[in-house]
Length: 374
Image 1 (cartoon, rainbow, N blue to C red):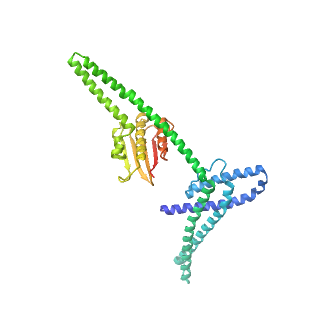
Image 2: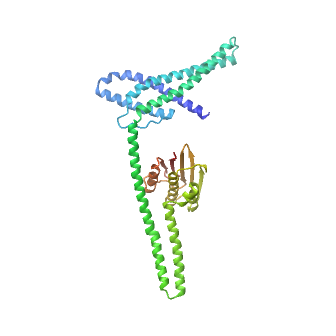
Image 3: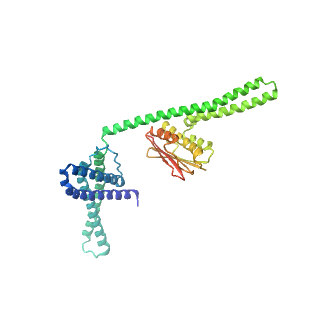
């Protein structure tokens, strides 16, 4: 079965459930109508309507592909929505009834043409054509009724424009605060790396050179200079490592693919990179940077904590979003609330993306970041 046919059948099933629900709601409304006269009865009816609306949300999401965001505590218009949905539910039932009649006409026409000695073939042909016409009109009507059903739910159960803007402002304020925390944490980490690593090596380098200058033994001085040279190489390597963690120059020079290949080559574990983004795809710099740090930090965490033997990195592009997945065969149990993963989540959220950590006990662990590129 093709994807379009499966979608059409799922939509028809959703409308059929909606039509049946309308009939059941009408019967239930007549039964509980006397309770509306009492305050407790009204509260009970409102609570029951809330549960019915919960089922409606499931039906819309499961069959019609309409996900209704929450409206806010106590503000969703449940009872008015159920009343307003009755005409749409009945219309959906009528459309599905037309589809059933069209199928019956077409089936009778085919059965008569194949298995019965026809005396009026023209009538059979006209009946089959009528069935096809009803099916065509019903197919168009199913899509229109489904759109009306989803639009009504979004209008009456979803947030208003002002509520959506207020929620968006709160989300941006929270992500901004999280990004500031991440920036401060990154700065403190860089300071620690410079103080505990590079600075200590430079101090040792200076001491070795000073001892070599004061030494009266040429062989001893040559040995100390050799040690100072090795210490300078190690200090330079650590300094490059710190600079790489701040922002890799290769990311600006050669792009995300080359930067991820460098991460795979530098890691102590085998890293398999599957980069399925076209070379002519121009990714925003902020998205490239976030994707790079997701992969880099995830691979670093695997090396430090997972006890894995291999890592798989997959980067794909679909529907205007960059999908980054890092999977390892370690023992699992990664904590999404840990400082490292929480920092990655904040970095991704700042771009309106989302970070999902799937790490059951015993493994495997998969970290997935979805970054919108619009």
